[in-house]
Length: 144
Picture 1 (cartoon, helix red, strand yellow):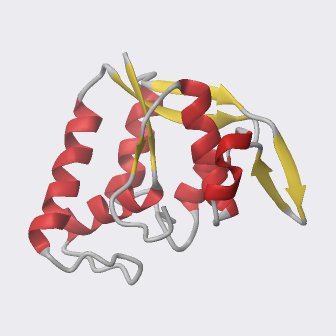
Picture 2 (tube, rainbow, N blue to C red):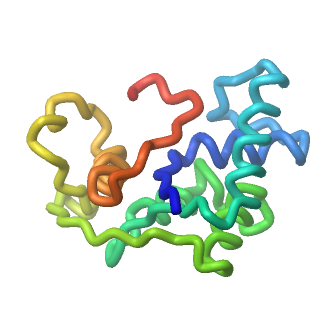
């Protein structure tokens, strides 16, 4: 089974396509690129051998998915894909170590990548990818 860490921008963009919905945080204006992301997510959802990597117990990745700026509503396609993976057991849970940055839990990442990460929120995905030996799927972030 293949496990994948999916950045929230992938799921947000995939949500835009079937609903004809324009999200202010989607930098992709080319409809063919948005459809390409949607097709990838649809294939990921339907393939029972592809697992969604999520962190426990803090669930920082899930919290990002549910953020008001990403996928706050359950009816959004991206959230439905996540729920489907949970419902079908297509989840790869990883346990991470965290440190506190005020109220925010920040994942500990391997020393060799610390200086490469500018967004503390991305650390949970990077740490999860290392822990699961999985790729990170990203569609458009400029800070990666």
